[in-house]
Length: 199
Image 1 (cartoon, one colour):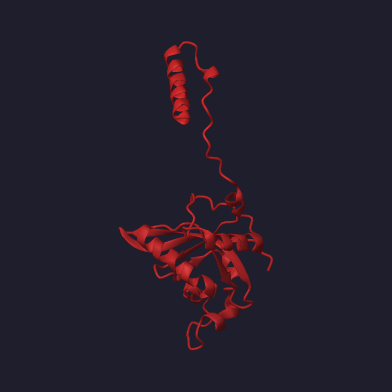
Image 2: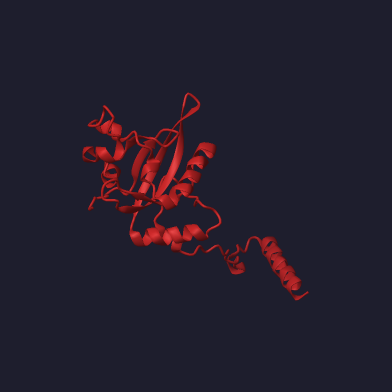
């Protein structure tokens, strides 16, 4: 399926039990949520069989890959308890063709009259290569969910880059000549550190 994703962020809104309330049209297309698939989503006894809004009454869990349901459930529980989830990596399955899509998602809890009302989700479809790589990393990290700035779902390539946490030494030659006391203190600290290493 060839779907243009000029804006990589897909959005959906859910009830507190993850029932679908609204969904981005591109995500709807990916999941094959259209009137042709009523037989897959709505029991044949439904009197609203041809109503496209009824297609959205299905729980989002319906589309989760069976191997990822527990992981997804943990994130669902986390958003209910702490108002947001970390960055999740999991798979969605389309209704009719059973295509598998690798997805990054974050959840946020929304309130109405000071009570939890709904769950908002930001999704990004990944390539199969990136998805498999991140699923493998998900198995090996201590925390199930990655933390991130929710305003921008990060690229998987960011996670592959090493982070440089080293602090560069303070060059004593660049100190202002008007502060001999500061320069002398820095030299004393360096000397003390050198002596401690020798002990």
